[in-house]
Image 1 (cartoon, rainbow over the protein chains, first blue to last red):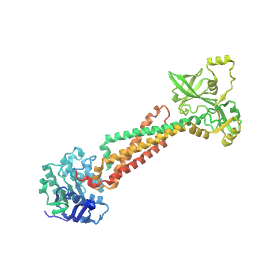
Image 2: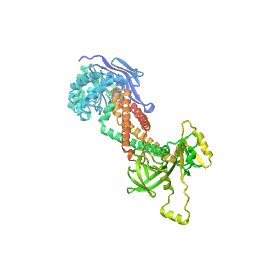
Image 3: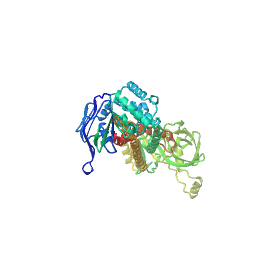
Image 4: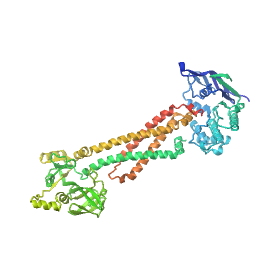
Length: 230
Length: 377
């Protein structure tokens, strides 16, 4: 499959916590490039820096050094270059969580619609997009149901719909299949892969789930804050 | 999409229960405000009732409410002859406990001269006193009805009319009788005591005394000058209406007023703390959801709106429930509970301010939440 533009470009990223004797280097000079249509897994033992790297790409953690460019826009270079990081996330990044993290007081369709509402979509376009996504993910019949009444698989598909709603080009997923059985886990990964291609997006997933390793284009290994391969 | 309302609807039963609890607290606060106002209003009601401009009382006394005052009834003529005085009437006050319909009845009996100031104002049922003797107009809180007959002293009085909001500072309902009947009540001895006095040959000469002379002045008359003139008569004192009201508040109900005022202050403080705790707890329970909202790109105003709207809805509901409850039960209180629209609106303002301050604590906590909290399990 041909790969497209570079959507995530991380150069010499470092992140440390604390100073002096208490200093912990979570990431040490990490370089990573991910292109449109690419599905990448971040692997590594606990404490290797996977989640730190994911948070930096998601603009929710400030690196100590390095540069970050998202969808062709340099967003970090010795400091954030944009003040509206939440707007940046809203426009460019979709998040999928280990536990679906749907808002319990909203129905499935409202959980998806809330992102479009925040992005300023017109109500009619919003409704069309929500139902298009839910139908595509085969949870359209559960649109009016609240998360507590959805099965694990349904809830995760609604969460995927929410992540994709505003057509972000970067999807970050933290253990998206951890709560699913192996069959559903592979189905979810196939779905993500398909959506990545269709929406010309890239997907970066933190995972420990060996059953789905074959669903990734690339496995990026981290050890003690450094890239081992990738 | 209003996520504040969606969240409320999601946990509606719990939210309604919280509002109801807060409503009960607001009922207590409003009741205390009403009791406080009622105390002041009751204390002033009896002074305001005659619509007097000038109170002529016994010299060197603060009568007739703060201290006993006795002056000759004939003083009325002297006062009436003063330039600028348009009307004057003698008045007496005494508390009588009697029995009626098998229960004890305590009345604040006001004796007044028919056709002169001091009589019942705004009759709400029946009529005013039309006969010289043995008719009575009572405050509705006495429980008496038009047509009832009640025994006062040695005589039986027919209730011919009812008034409202006429009682003394102790809350005893007023009963208006003619001055002649009131004086007889004050001076007539029990038959046995009268016989003993007569046997001793010491039957006193009848010298009618009244508690005060109340006067109304003609438009443009100088009340200060009238007061000063009366005070020059060595055996009389004079108080303006304003002085009488302030005296009553300072001397008679001040401690009770301050007591209730202090308790009201404590109650408002406790309410503020309770509201703050409820709102803060509501916010803390939602931190994970707030982190998720921040992560998916919700701006601060969305988060602040969620917390502040819920806080204000909670406060408004509590205030509304409290107001409805107190309006439903206020007439069951033995003494008056007076709620002025101003007080109710001030309480609404205080609750709104407390809710905003309390939501400020919640907002502070919410804005500090790291969006990364939403990641992972």
